[in-house]
Amino acid sequence: MKKKRILSIVITVFAVILIALLLTGFYYISVMKRTLKEVTTAEEAPKTILSVYVLQKDSAQSIEDTIGYSYGISSSYDSEAADRLLFTLEDLLKERPNVIEFENVFSLTDALNDQKVNAIILEEAYAESIAEAKGYEWTIEGIRKIDSFSFQEEESVSGSESVPQEIPEIFTVYISGIDTYGDINARSRSDVNILAFINTRSDKILMLSTPRDYYVDFDVTQGAKDKLTHAGIYGIESSMDALKRLYDIEIDYYLKMNFSGFVNIIDALGGIEVYSEYDFSVPNIRDYQKGYNELTGIEALAFARERYSFAIGDYQRGKNQMEVIKAVLKKCSSPAILKNYPAVMNAIAGSFDTNMPENQILSLIKMQIFDRKSWDVSSFTVDGTSSYQPTFSMPGQNLYVILPNEESIVQAKEQIKEISS
Image 1 (cartoon, rainbow, N blue to C red):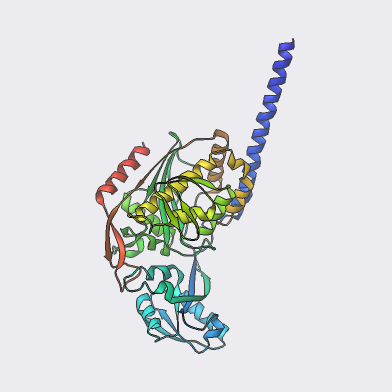
Image 2: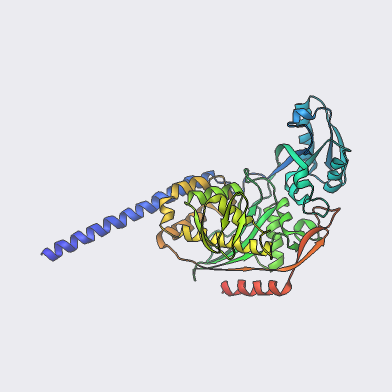
């Protein structure tokens, strides 16, 4: 009788614990549902950001200080956004600015340097790419942004491709890290280009990294070549199209995140432990040691972006980016995710853009919470040969690119086939 009573108590306690765990899971799922209402899910149109730059030595500190200035603009820009900016400038300056058109961003920048114009209008997505051309390194320190203006496009083509209605056992996610802070909808270069091939049957994930400077073609180039990072300027679909053509695959979903979201989510997780193959330093951030490093959000961002410290440059950056993703996956698969869940959800809201339907995201969350899956993660980075070549998006100068190594592409395809079987 006593044994039965003890057994009854044990079963009751176990049942209470089980119910508590289930309720905890449902609580986190409900928090996730609220968060998903705030997440941009491919419904809002992309934004073009145009900025006004002057020479570093120029006295102007604001748009109002440029009254009487001549403005330079490239004829290759989206005409609608450019026209809207000129109307905005006219309103701010109380006069129609004197505008001179130039064939491309390089002749535009030359005009500023030669003082043929006093200010130039640069599409934000191109600004950093100018400095990558030989002879234009001076723009890093030589020009200064005094203001930026954001213009939402009339229609969104984002999310136009069909996505699976139910989560397949094996699916592919394109992870794009755009090189901006702030608005996730801003058109921008994609500095992180990782394909995650996920097999829920075998609990395996393959992460395939493609260098940002890979020389590829995509839907809008009509056969011409460009850097993979520039595909992001034309929208997430162009980046996906470039990778589909390169690896001869289909991509089910995408996940786009900017620098702000990256930093906020890692801090909300309480930091991550990331493995580094090398000792190196990022000025004003920290020293990284060979082995495992406990990193905050900003430290993880610097770790993922650094390339100049390594002999193999962008290839090592790709490897480091995948180490960061591995660390995030590990943290999210641990009890720490439950402790920090509300903070993580708050950080996610507004920080990423995805075409994965809400019900599918919830299914994955339920699977992770209740099954507590431990993923076997492998990674691979394709390589190539450094070169300077013309690019579709920035004609007028040859830019640094990486010509794909066909042997490494074949290796990547073999690994894709293996995880998909």
